[in-house]
Image (cartoon, rainbow, N blue to C red; front, side, top):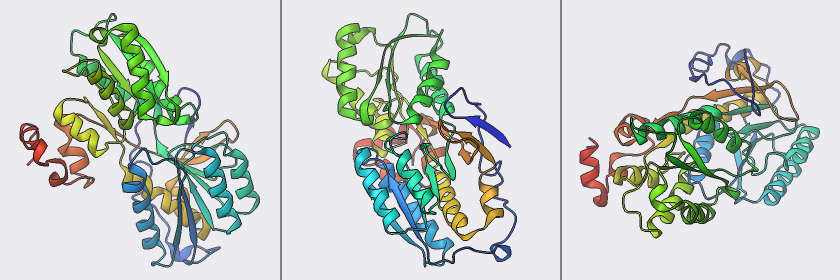
Length: 368
């Protein structure tokens, strides 16, 4: 079993689902002694509406998998906090009061939610931390190797700068929200790759991952550094990358420097095709979301063999050690890799990507 401290330097080993034993899990449901049957209620709490992945991918995939695992008897109670930590605490408290059987939590503020996580624990409701490692007595965690995400972003950014990359090249960093523990890990991974290869001329921790704030930050950096002196922009996700592009366009930049992203939003795929964004990180949401659904159902049904097969890693939070976990692999997506990632996995159809405005770019990228 591999142990990873999520708030210190993490291993950069990439784990696949098969490597974690998920695809070949042993033990059948018939051998388990369920604590509950299929008539269960799973609470699902997502953090924001800025990132379209939550409503477009994570929640629908979880809902479908829970239905499959419970013969369509399981119910899902879904809420999105719209970037408000206080709203999420109220949503979670209501789920506790409603006596849901298990909660899948993607926290707005990992520290602030700890008290509510403890209330769930005291009420006998397991909490599965999803995507972001919330503090408090978490029962399990599923996410990606977040430092590896930052490393992949930075390495691909450096590739975008070409073979003549120099320590004098100035890079702006637009990092994620300081209340999101993942953002700290993305940043740590990216800095580890960029240090000594380029100059990090300015760095921002962007409240709530807000693209409007990201645009303001890059505008400030342009004023201080000069638009022609910015070699690249590290953006921690796709939503903020859109703000980065707006800031550069407003400053008169017509040919974008390499800009990173994360989440493989459809808008980001279009920006990559048009040359406005260099790359995004595709995180296989079906793998992550289905694993969370399976963990939740197996946990409350007492199927320990299946649950253990899903959680062969462990992680530490500031409050809880040895949390059973699964980390899912990630992929860098540049123009040449769109077909082999988001299209191959069925995230987007060619028809969704190659609309009239992108027909020429799609043809050039081999998307037919």
